[in-house]
Length: 454
Image (tube, rainbow, N blue to C red; front, side):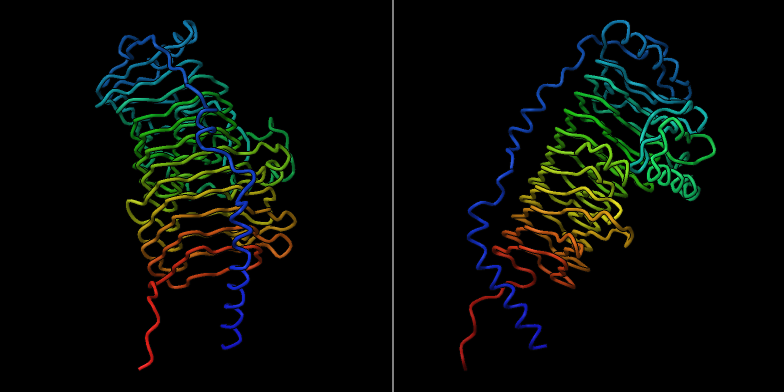
């Protein structure tokens, strides 16, 4: 025991000796969040407004509004776009809504879109992604493909009706899930990756695929069949003042995959899974495409659900320049900040900045691992340049700070500054790491001046 204590003390002395050098050059590649946000620019919203009811829509909760949405989208195609106003009422939609260029879905206060539960209504299959693998599957319930200047706004609600529909497929998805992963690893051509009917892969509630200039603002999103909002190979994105009430399995709030230039702010999360998950493809396909997810700012948000901020585990093309600022948990999160990969993934996670973030009760406050699910080989991930400052957690039932590197690829250059964790079962658990720096870190009770000899 004496040897272990001396070893720990020596390690901290070494870290303190390195401190001044690290502080003088904390990250030569750090970007300004203001520059990232300015780079997103102004997202132009169509000014021409038409009511859904002008195209046969009815908010009586019984009429199928799929034909009305198809008509208004055709109108937008033929007239250079439009702002589609959905007045108060409950609008049943038996099938997907496909957004087009310069279209804005504007849900007024008191308006609710509720999707039908017949899976056949979401065929034919469309190009999409499922857990990091590109394939053809059921259409997401709201879907935009290679569109520009698209928006979902207003004070209304989007109800995926997942509890009564697709969510029941969770226990039946395993064969298709494994098939998709094998197709990824074997580089099967996209045109052969046909799922849909009989394969039980749940569609996302909202997906933007290959889109540019996206705004999601003000709406409430609930009862999703799978991921709630999925940004896939998209850029220039603002998500603001959205509220989530999504308690089904895999109900992530925002998933950004192969995407860049994103601002997520002033969000009220309440999700049964990750609040924000940043991804960049799975395994062979991700490494082959090499489309990095980058330039992502998450600020002024309220976390609630499984995990607050997650990077991975599907991140094989790499994730960098992520900024989490001025956020707090409004309730329990299993893990606060969670960076996860394994030796199937490869790629990198780097230049991650967490500043002024507060959690209450968690299982683990901050967890970085190269061994997610304890599986994989041959493609260790490069995890480095992680900067966490002004971080508070009231209590962690398991661990305060955890870093698990890979023997051949250590997690390196992680700096903790002004960290306060009031109580936890295990304070630190670090393995296969290098250049871990502590500045003003307190885990447990703050120790006062030493007592005098009596």
